[in-house]
Length: 345
Image (cartoon, rainbow, N blue to C red; front, side, top):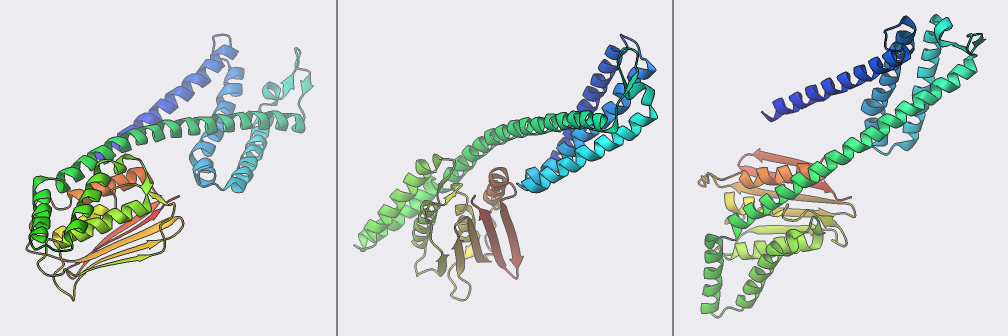
């Protein structure tokens, strides 16, 4: 259904563009012919109008996405010069075919334009249509980005609410508080630390994660607290390996995006066997973070809600990071691995 909607929207947009340009060209033909379709006005605004429209879309659909959007400014400038010069030469060749209509000036049409004069004029018009298509591209991108921001805001709210529902619920709180109670009953030295970690998790989830971006080090600290609380569920020490390479300084990341993979590992994995621990690997660079989680699949766990959290986070990644992230999910011989890489710039 979503693919069908995309195709329908593209067809509708193409139809609107075609009708708009045809209407505009016909308007100038009629205006030039004083309300009539004349041969001269058709040549002047029909043929050459289509060439100008072609310049518009070559820049809009090919040159801008290929070079300017990718910040290849030098190649963009070269491409524009080539497009303007090529189109102007092509226009001159076409104009020579209709020389008595296109190349003459003056009341009595006694003056014929030279190649240089015509080339300069055609180049100016070509530049105008390039400017027009560039402005149109920026305007469309602005509206699209605003729409994406609105969608992302709603998606983030939905994700946070879904996450709170799945984690901060009576079952989660009951298990955690019960574990902490057991520690307190045993007068364990771990009790204050467990209470503090639960407090930090609640504070982060309810308050600090409301921003569009949060400090990467806070997100990692949140993961560490979550892992420590999850360990309280096990009678014996669970087998969980957390490896962090690099330093989190001023990097920013979308909040509550990494936790879903760790939650999935604890929920559907096995952490009671030394030969197949839950492996969590974080590699931090100045402008990039790689996050990898592996776990042995617990085939006895038949949770009907499995996968919803990961689908949710995939949707958020696509909306926020677009082409600035890579996610691979692999299942080989009962080992489930999520490998995420995010460009933080």
